[in-house]
Each structure stands twice: as C-alpha cells, then as structure tokens.
Image (cartoon, rainbow, N blue to C red; front, side):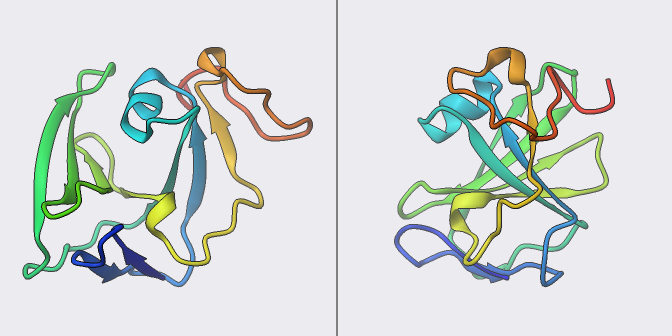
Length: 130
C-alpha cells in the first residue's frame, strides 16, 4: 500500500497489500498524537523504512513499560510509523495509507473514548488480549 506524509517527502510501500489488522485506538497517547478523538493504526510485519526518507524518531515509554519508536517526517511532522519494542509488528498510522479500509477495524482503549463506538464493532476496553 502506498504510504506518504502530508508534504510528500516521506513515502514508502507497506510489505503487504493489506494490513494484518486495523485498530482504532482511543487511548490518551493516540488522541494526543493524532490531535483527534482517536488514532488509527494498521499492523504490518516488521519492515525496513527507506534510508533516503527524511524521517526523525521520537522514543517514548508506553504504559506497558515497552519503548515505542515513533517515526515522523522531518519536513512536515506527520507521524508515520510506530515500532513497539515488545511486539513483532509495525504500526503504520492510518491517515497516511492510501486506500486503507476501516471495515473490520477493532476499537481499543474504549474506556477512554470520547466519541461513541459504532454498534456491533469489535471492541476492547483496554489493550487487546489483556
């Protein structure tokens, strides 16, 4: 899938034609990062980001104690990818993926939601599987 930042300087292809899963996250970190009511992440197997892309990295501590490397475009600041030290996957931010479908997306951290969760949606009150 084609992925690009707001200014177009940072772009890459995902390793698969569709994500393994799509999450709509209502946690405080995702809300703050997206400056919106929720964040959207598409899960892919680990892959290398292009060496020639103007990316910068912000590293933060997750509530789980894991470190999360948050890659963003150095030119426009668009957040693009998160890599969690305790997961064997990469989260690509949904807003930068062309043609991403939200059909079947899983809502997580619903106990922090500030917007209604669609009826019938798969939902977790916190972290999936915890």
